[in-house]
Length: 375
Image (cartoon, rainbow, N blue to C red; front, side, top):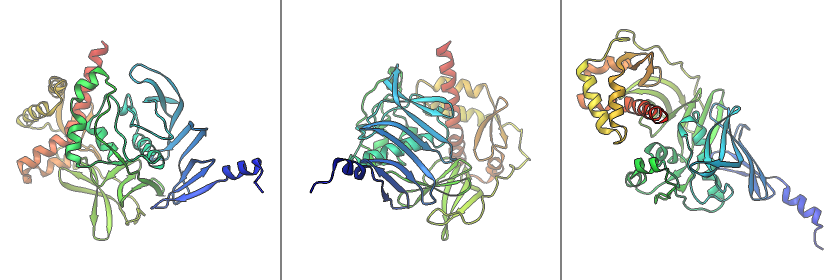
């Protein structure tokens, strides 16, 4: 005897649970995955569906604030139609229209720099998980901004073959494509490999895939494979989130076990050594850095990078967990790094300076170019 239609409908809507490798629970109903909970029971994301169409998506960031993707699209000058990405009450950026049930490509975001920490990672990871559940073996990026920063962000939720070659192909012609707003597909296949986020204690979020890969403490990310100052290292049978200043392990923030469980409390970031604070870098070092950063800058930014550096004093300061920051009209570098200069190899020193200054200086140059364009 066949089950009555009402009974079949009730059965199809009954919640089902699937547990992932590191303890995340996916909750499905009506043939759609609707929620994810971490191993402590915290909601990671929730999705509402209208048939095959996404109705609403709420993603939690590492600091437990939310990013909301509005499923209804609006006209967009670059992407034709786009979803608003909402933080608090404000739409801070827009994402090109996508089939979220079965993604066929990686969509662009118009102003990724406007997204707060962890928001882009949450969205890309949800995309990777959705693609994996739909049976996609790879996705390609379709949009005008194939930057090295985007490639790095994608590497947390996707894998590529031969990463160095893939990065070179991914960023080829990035300047001309950005200027044209070209919505061309980049021929680099990204294979979905989503991570899991867990919140084991107040203020701590851990990211696991093959193992522990990233830790957020107070919303600040410390990564295993990262060029910035906030890093992870192995220490005996534990992991350590720490601040690296040009190769100097300056401050250990938090120890964790292999599952991402904190071993004790996070240690507050200390004040920087005061001896050099406020002192300008020697003029010959400032000139060398200007030349190197201009040479490394994208062609359209090189002159503006020089103007930015000429227009700011380079000095030592207390930059907390960053190697460099903009402060009171000056570009400051961490004074603990300055204390190490007499013992450093010149090439190592130059590389550390460039690593710390390049992202900041390029952002300032891009902002200046945008202001000139708007004027």
